[in-house]
Image (cartoon, rainbow over all chains, first blue to last red; front, side, top):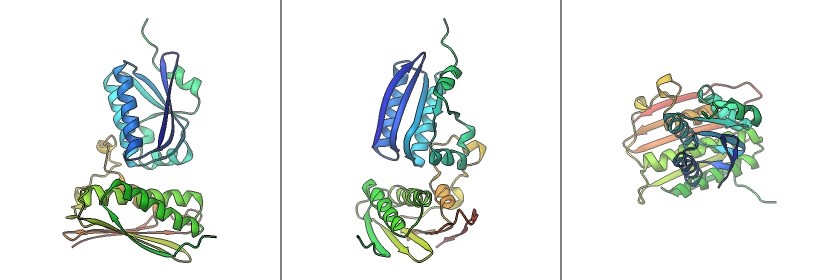
Length: 117
Length: 155
């Protein structure tokens, strides 16, 4: 089961995720969460994966789908605090080269393109 | 103390619940066999990916078709065999997930991940179904084993 909480930090929505992002409820919840954010015109999204214990290939697919959908809206989706297992998974699949991955939340927030005045 | 059998043969239905059951059975045997946490994760993930393929792509969730899981623990390794009753597939048509054109694909990484996470990986596929045999040896990471012997046979 995946746990999802949202919080706004400056102009970025931080999504704290926990549990397993796998085929079924986990990946569907991630998909729904990103969809809801886009409906709300939230296009600067930081996914905090610190408490994510497991991602399977279906979960990877949802991360890619979310990244693509947010980028298509002119926004950014970045990843924060990868566990060792998730880090290894992204390296094996070369997705480490696709995602913007951060280790520090404040630095991550500051790295998003500011909202136009 | 719970005794874990060293050999388990399980017939699974073609459902997502079977994926969880297969993963749990493999992890229990790996834990009982003394595999470390890292290897248990790799074994669980390989079994998960291959069972998902069997249920979804092989048997296409057909209620009359089964997935056959065979787990065998020896002194130095865990051997896992997964068979489905689907129509088989052409492995040459499975895209390389590391090719730059395929990096952003949302699917197609299951076999690649299982092959990477296990020490041996063999796949046979044909009209009678797809059969995969995977082996994880203890302490394979410490001995620097990075590759895998693999074979593909089309019936």
